[in-house]
Image 1 (spheres, one colour):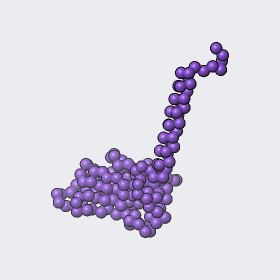
Image 2 (cartoon, rainbow, N blue to C red):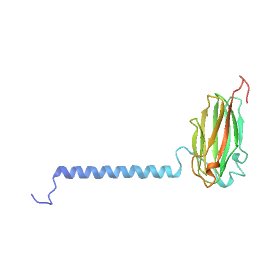
Image 3 (spheres, one colour):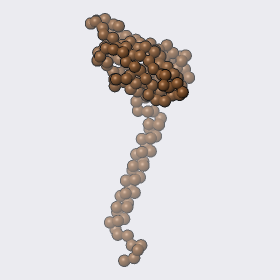
Image 4 (tube, rainbow, N blue to C red):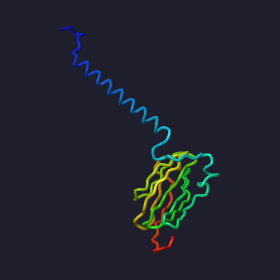
Length: 166
């Protein structure tokens, strides 16, 4: 047997390995290409240049709907959250809709499962319920610049009477 002789079974395994590598690289390329256009949790886009002047985010607010849903329209920018104090009712759904006009920020309500990345050009949207009344700290958990460590806000979860909006 010469040194250049390769067994038929070895050729089959080499071919299978090459096909598998090609499939993995193809799947990786397709997934990276799809998610590079739109991150999976950010499907609504907005022009970051107009966020401060011509959008619902120009005047951030908390909206109490008659059906019990509370909607928080927030703007996250260097180095603040707007509104800086958010009041929501305990035990009712709260929908957060937020965007950023400048850089990537994080929005984390400490001690809860509310945690989202806020990316310029996209609207971050999630709904949660806060089961316990109290004050919660809101922090930016994505480094956004020199004063990042001072970026915070307050979420106040208030008890309400039946049939009464906060």
